[in-house]
Image 1 (cartoon, helix red, strand yellow):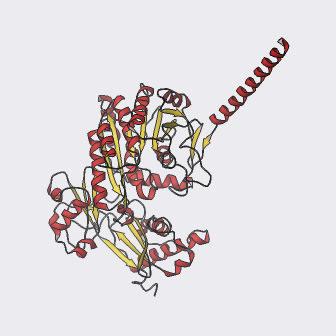
Image 2 (tube, rainbow, N blue to C red):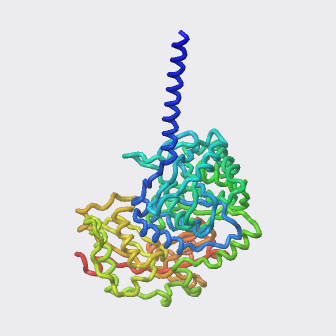
Length: 534
């Protein structure tokens, strides 16, 4: 009997040892896990050189204020880069070249629910720009602070034949370009209840104490409202950012006074940033998808913001660092006088040959996509093709809109902009299914090339029907194209007032000190107009 007990005990020990070994093996495998990109080639380019070039262009075009302090946290959108990349660049431009002990990225979960915040247990997250190593020690420390924060794969897994989470991933290429090398703690919130928000905010407050850390809260704003309603809802969110009040933000989110898919991550970042010394939150830029697609009937809102810690040393460093920041192309060299396009510094008119070249480039770009090759068209000798210009490409089929996407700001050379936007209008306009090969011969292509943007010193110089307007005040910005006031029969003052409304501002905001008014013109031409298509 005794021998049987001893043998049984020995067997039990062997089983336990084997289980422990397997657990250790599984644990080591987990630690070596590298999270591969899930949305490269969809939300952003899957080619490393193209991706880096695109991000650099966004950063170069972001004109940010001198903030006089150290950035502790940023709020950044997570849509496809063509929609929200320029807005995201404003936050990342502030931290470009900075050095941090660790970066914590907090995102919502769009793909599954779980009742806690999940901290990635693996070795790295990867993007086309390379692997970002995980700070495993800090990750475990964060998770040790609360039962509502756990080391777990939930929200981080690549799910075969299913949608995988994108909201954390899309922040990483921007961080890689802006910061270079850094260690990461990736966190996905499966539950954004006040309890989980408070638990995560407090856990980060304790774990990051004494470290130079950057927190990134990933969030888009309202989804699929008309432009006017979206700007009202998103205006409330921006007000809560300015208030730097996580409790009021959570209250407004719960009562539907505002909307944000990552409201919880933003509130958690606020709690942690305040504890780490941040004293204010500065909205940097707002836009919505309608500013890119031109469709204002159903839009998604985007905002970037910075939570800032004041210190004499940080203020001095910040002042020095930001003196070299360039302004947005199209605004930095624009004249401060009248409305309308500058004819110097890159404001040349398009010739007929230029227009034919751009329309041919747009069509060849779409056709080449189906052939799996690059567009076949000779490089234009015209210097205007190298000028940075905003432009829209519009596709119509039997007179009906089939896609329209563009850049309002002068981010890239004109030829590059048209090539990129032709592809985007055909395959990435979320309002339509991607263009099919059999539709291409039926498409009519129209291009709108925007002039360089000029600041308006005297509103009386604005010409209705010729000028488009941009009104900016703080983080609020609204744009109306030149044809809008003509279609609605507005006079100049009404045009200015309605552009303010588009920006989510009072109608008379254009008269107030501190409101910036800019204008531009648009050269609109189509294949049919130039006789390229019947």
